Image (tube, rainbow, N blue to C red):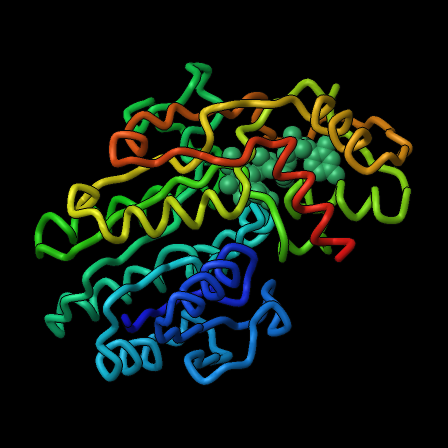
Length: 311
Ligand code: UD2
């Protein structure tokens, strides 16, 4: 049994990770301000401590880290909306970067020795630089405050790993989908919005021509990747793409979903979103070298997601 901290643990990826770690008998503390996450995403059970708090409360975070001396720390709390970071760069910077840096500082100053700290970075760091698929060594071209903060924080953590021997890894998530992804905002993950649309047989607006493509990865594969990295010494001080290595266009995903649900939706078209990335596709050789293999392709993931929604 390990003591685990998950910031953003009530959110999409965080709540799925919390449930996986609880089911394996770990003791999990979740810190989440519920700005996007939902307490309903989490079970009630004795091995889970839920704390509604922002990671920007540095005094609180520092006390918690020192007091609990966690074995594993997953830093998933963020304002995940790219558009929000364009609108409110200072506020989102405080959350996406500064609050995390303060966590690293507490770890350093108080000589804490977590077995692993994992920070969630993003494929956004690659921007729209055209070389594909993206390896971890591909050019970095962040286009938004969100992407800049993700990259900078990832770098801070790698520097801390190197300078102070902190056991740390960073992951660049591509397009993760599955249960608990909140479809409320227009900037929610496209597959959560599509799922909602199929549920209501409503209408879905494609931004652009629908030929944009993404490397969609199902949540359980992401959890496998995170757990693999947390336990593998070769991952220390390293950054990894977390994706499937396959890409699908938005129109193909809609077609797949029509087949799976046996429903039809109305598709409308509007201008491409400002700052939208045309193609996003990962090379996952680095992660595969450690033994990672994605098990669920986008079709199977959509099938499971749909089954969950109609459970
Ligand atoms: C994802 C992440 C973002 C960042 C980025 C890195 C999500 C929700 N966002 O943004 O945080 O890490 O990757 O590259 O995972 N679309 C529509 N209609 C809709 C909604 C979306 O056509 O109603 C399009 C959208 O314009 C885009 C594609 O679908 O071309 C995917 O959109 P998204 O918001 O799910 O993800 P992305 O890749 O823009």
